[in-house]
Length: 158
Image (cartoon, rainbow, N blue to C red; front, side, top):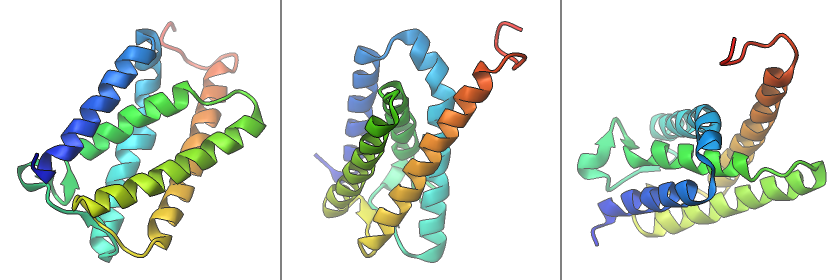
């Protein structure tokens, strides 16, 4: 299989996993958070990497749009739908969960670097990126969900 198809394959695997395990109503509810904290953050991270020259996507050929692989933001959005769906309620488990997400993402970035999809910088870059990304995404999600639960907050019903 050509390297350029690997992101498409893992995106489809994420989508199939999401459809298989996350109820449709939860997919609808969590999609906006996945887009914000997954897709948009990925584009921002890719832009930072591209403009600083520290890291970036390579071998995306016709799937590339302005130094971003077309399937990467979609994959991150779906990943974060799954991530938020399984986010534990208790804080102690959340810490372990967030650390696991950071560890998995650093490992995954190293794998796709070795496959020739990502131009890696020193290991400190993905570690720093994913620590910031996961902490901001988890904190932001929890704050937005709390805000939506407050009395008087606008919902889809009002």
